[in-house]
Every structure is written in structure tokens, then in C-alpha cells.
Length: 295
Length: 325
Image (cartoon, rainbow over all chains, first blue to last red; front, side):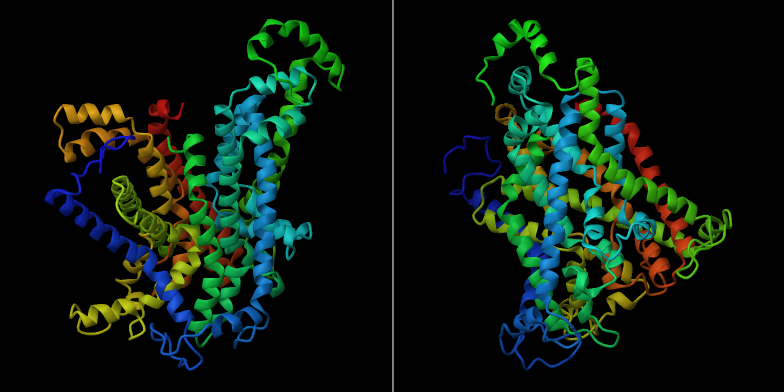
């Protein structure tokens, strides 16, 4: 391998003994770490593939004797013990919550980020600091008063009520503002002078230029809402409104845990997010880099 | 809509065109400055309203609740002043939970930096299978923390189903099964170890920072005869300081919510509260004991702890302000 174009490598050339040893050591370290990060999910999948004959032991053996997708089918259509409704309903709920929160966050945060980056108005900087400071507030501090407050407005046990707490984070506004600050403002000025309204400038000029930042924020919001557990369990009284992480509780009964269906349900919850996160990782990296979040 | 205006001509006849703009805007009796302020507030108002509605008012409500004796059936209950705070200060569980979450942060934040930096550095060497490694390290942070914790609970079972015990027994490290999660001395360390592997996001941020490493700096280090260790120690690591600083600050600010899902799914704070963390303590007070007043006081205590960390961080953040523009 010849010298690289983007910065030189630290290791010796791979055709020398030293270079080979260095690579062997690196692979050993990485494989051990990968076993610890991905291994648990490999176990999750093998347990979920236990065939029908699985003994109801707690916990089951890790390697199935009969491999089968039966657990997935049973969980999806709600034919497992302890489960009173099909899992696809929870799957749809989760998509609605994640998509709803993502749409609201993208629109609201991009608008606010644009104003904080470009417009001058009294109280702007202090408002921006206040919005970003919401990052220090964790859901565990808020869930009791939010439940009681939402109850006053009939938002408890509604889809909108479950979506709302996933939209308050100041992270998106910070990301959008930093990103818009890196864009040249000439085009916006030109559009303004030609009589375009401020919202028209935002919608037709700024939004088309910030695709990678919007994808980054969209993916982050979608995944965080998909994985959310505390808000749905607090705000959904009705099991018909549960999302996937909350619905996992079905398999953890008072006396026993149904490990094989539980692991199948966990895989159904997890796999879409792994695909989304891994396939869009370039956007993450780019979004963080451009917005200066990395420092 | 957008004219193909060249920016130099813009500044040239900017004054001339201002008049036209004034006529084209809808609100005629406002100056441009006032108009901009109005638009600014209009654009940020949806976010501000969401924050007021879901954070600000509930926070005020939480402060009030923390001063009452509220339960599920008596909401909000009668005013008791600072009684709940007095109870909190005298609660050994509260102090244990603070100690536990501090210990968790002291282990998890440094290991997060070590793993993510070393992995990003190694993946820069264009090793075979880099794609696989990257995906494998991202997986724990993509899914719900709850599922991660449930699978670890399964792995730590003290019987043949628990792979950790099975492996340790198989290789003769232990003589009999260890009850990792039901021992007061091992529950917290087990929870902490299970939480050490979520470094995928930090890794991605380091990878993007390393990609921006100036090639000239590395070359001049080579010309000066620096060896690999010296390059990492004296060139790359110092250049990564802003990134490292950012990652540490973010994790410190989020430290109080660390371990909620893990404790919820793996130990329930037990045995005998030995693995309790503040976030789960609030949950337990509210859900298992329906002590909403005490739970609210505990939430305020947790908030105060976060504020304390933020205040301590404020000093280095100010002096390192040049990194953040």
C-alpha cells in the first residue's frame, strides 16, 4: 500500500514483520471490543430463534436446539402467553410517535435555529442560552409534574401527549443554528431584497441548503423517540397506546419471564434502528462535523 | 424566485433597493429593525412555547409539589414546607444513589474516551473489516438502553443460562455460579460494566475529528523523527483536545440520568438499594410508593446536582471559549 493522500498512517507497511504484528494486535483488540458491543445482541437473536420445543426455563439455554422463526410470528400477531394484543400495533404506535416527533422537531428547530443564526432581535442571545440549557433537564425530573400538567389539558393517554415531551430538547436548535452560521448569507440577502418574505427565504433558500443537518437531526430524533421508555410508560394509560420498549414489559411477568418471545420482541424493536443508524452514519458524522459540535 | 444576483452588485446598489423592500413588506408602519425583531420572535416562538409548556410550567409545578405531602390519591396534598427536603437530606438511599452515580460517571466517562479514541485511531489505519468494526461499535447506542440492560441481565444469570457465569466456570476461573445482580457488593459493579460499551457515538465524533487532522502536522512530526507513540501523545491527542473536552462536558452534564434503564431492568436499585441511582430513586418513589411529594423533592435534588456540575464546568468552559468560537 502506498502512502495515503489524507494524512499518513501510523502503522508500518503491511508487508513488514512489524507492520503485520501491529495489525494483528489491532485486530485482536478490536475483535474483543466488538464481541462485547455486538455479542449481547447476537445472544438476543439466538435466544429469539428457539424453536417450539423450548423448555420454559429461566433463562433458556443460549443456543437453540431447534431453530425457528415461530417466536417472531407469534409475537407479531399476538399469539404468545401474557400478550393480549398483536405486536404490530405497538410497532405502528412507535412509528407514529417517532415520525410525529421528528416532523415537529425538524420544523420548529430549523425555524428557531434560522432566527437565532440570522435575525437580530432583543433578547435573542439570552433566549438561545435558555433553549440550549434545557439539555440539563432530564425526563426523570419532569415526569411527575408533566403527567399532572398534561392531565389538565386532556393530553394524558393521547398520541399528541406522548409525542410532545420528545420535542422540547434544545439540541436541535443548537445544531441548526451552528449549521446555518456556516452557510453564506448572500443568497438570502438577494432574495430578501427582491421582495421575498422572511419565511419564503427560510423555506426556499435556507432549507434546501441544510439537508445533511436536517437528516442528522431527523435521525437522532427518530431514534431517541423510538427507543423512548419513560414518557410512554408515564403518559399511556391504555395498553393500546404503548410503544415497543414499553410493550416489552408484557413478557416479564410477576412469576416468570418468557425469554424467547421477549428476545424476539426486542429484536423487532432493535433491528430497524440498527439498520437506520448504521446506514446513515455518514450523515451523523457530517452533521456533527459541519455544525462544529465536535469542537 | 431567487435571482441569480452576483454578490458584489448587491452591496453596490443596496441603499437604492432598500426603498423597494420597505414598500414590499406587509407591515408598513414598522422600521426594518422592528420588522426583523418581530420575525425573529415569530420564528422562535413555536420552540419557546413548547419549552414553556413542557418544561417551564411543569418545573414550577414540581417545585410546589416538592413542598406538599402528595400521594396518588391526594394530589396535590397539603403544604408541608421543607419537610420533604429534610427527609431527603436524612435519607441514606439518596446519598447512596449520589455516590453510585458519581462512581458510575468516574468509570464510564474515562473508559468511553479511551475506547472511542483508541478505536477511532485504529480505524484510521484502514484495517481490513473496518466497516464491520464500525457497525459493531455503533450497535449498542442504536437500540433502546432498556433492551441492552435486559440482555445483560440474561447474560449475568447465576445458572447455565447466563453466558458470563457459564464461560467463567468453563474456563475454571470460578468454582460456582456468581449471583452478580443479587449480591450487594457485585450489583453496582455489574451494572457499571454493562454500561461501558456505549462508546459508538463518541467514536463517530472522533472519526470525524481525525479526518480533519491536518496532514502537514503529521508530516512535520515524521520529519522531526517522532515515533508512533510520540505522534499520538504529542501531536494527535493535543489536537483532539476540543473534541475530548466536548465529549467529557456532554457526558458530565448528562451524568445524573446515567444508568436509569440499566438499574430499572437489571437490579431495581437493589439488593438493599446497593445499586440505586437518583433517576431510578425518583421513579421508584413515584411508581412503587406513590410518594409524589418526596419524589418531587428528590427530583429537585437531582436537578441541583446537575446544576452544581454545570456550574463547576462553567469555569473551564469560559477559559476554553476559543474552541467554541
